[in-house]
Length: 557
Image (cartoon, rainbow, N blue to C red; front, top):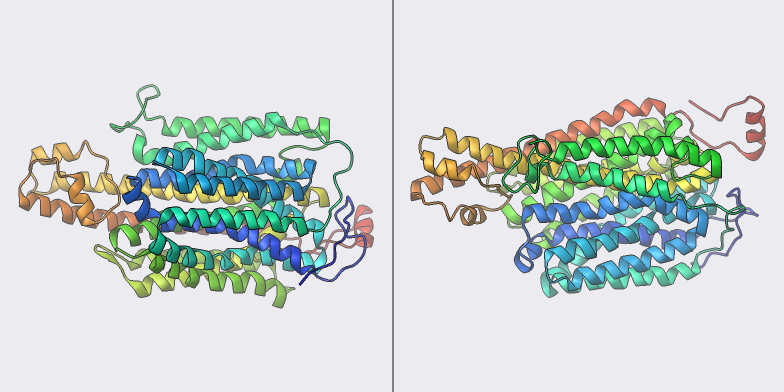
């Protein structure tokens, strides 16, 4: 259906009242699906990366993390660029850069090119594309239509479940490289469709790009996330053998996190000065000083933290340990995607007066329960299929419930221009959340496997001291029994010792995965502490806003 083009004024409200614009929201959904589908394709490619490019679990973890790392570092900048250059321009540019990144992934000769060229390009493209999706919604829709539009964008995460299943079929029949070329063609299609987006008026006056803020945000987020993700390979305090350098004799992981937090604290102070001077900043004060905005940003982060947990825990375990095919894993995404789509779209449409706070709280509980079910589905030799699919379904219920209101509660609590620019910070929080899920839970998983195997071997009377000492110098990856035997093949041992070590490793990978799921569940439930700040449930009309300026307040609970 071809919706009429409209002109949108600087305040964000359409010049005339229009029916719900269908074609624009379809284009925005396709863009959102593409960025989510790219992560799904990477999860499906775990086995192919191991075989074709010789990837280790740590490299797969880095490949999963680099996209949200780059996106998290630059999506705030993408939100500012959209405000300065126009959202349609940044939307189109982002789709083209994503397409270039997918081509680089398809042609990568090794994991270095795959990670540092392909994944970085896709992350940069997404840092323009995703904020543009969220930035266009407040400009093209208002009132109930805006809530439904945000629900549609949230539902795109559910619709994107179709992509992993389709991509899984392509990957199983044609291989990894044609799969990423197919994604490149998809993003080119999105770029072409952007020509049909309605015109929106440019910003008022001349706005300056906050280069200092972008540099500080990128550096701070990079240090925090790299530090967290490297705990499993560098060590928490005592440096591991593969640690590239030390800081005063300890692993650089925690110092990197601490330095990143200091840089982000400096960013907050700098942005206050920039906003007072230029009237626009990378990080407007309203983002940090409005409790409901912070609660909404946490909801965005936790929703994608949950997805990061899935990508680093369930998908690798099912493929590397249980031997599930890409199509099998793709089927799980359908089980998750259907309730995500139904609830993200259905709650705003069918329950327009639902309390956003209670909706988001319910979603958190379902997500935590889903992680618990998934933890129990893991076994020493694979996974229980009924438990996996039940956990996947509950995950979709939780994710769809949270996404139905996460973006809208942010927009409701901000002035119109900040609401549009908030797409960048929302997207950043989503990617930071996903990166934290991959980094933190991946570190718990890999650190747990290595430490449990080492301690288990040292305490086992069937394993000699010599074998235990050699094992203590190794960093172990998640893998099948056969892959573990290959990792320890250079150690001289008896067949009894080898069998015992295989048993210890099977127990360690199972328990470490369960512990990682438990940590994830606790973090999701901590999000409940922020929800009391959600009190504004609708944006006042123009007349109400004028009244509000004289002392009234928007509708609250």
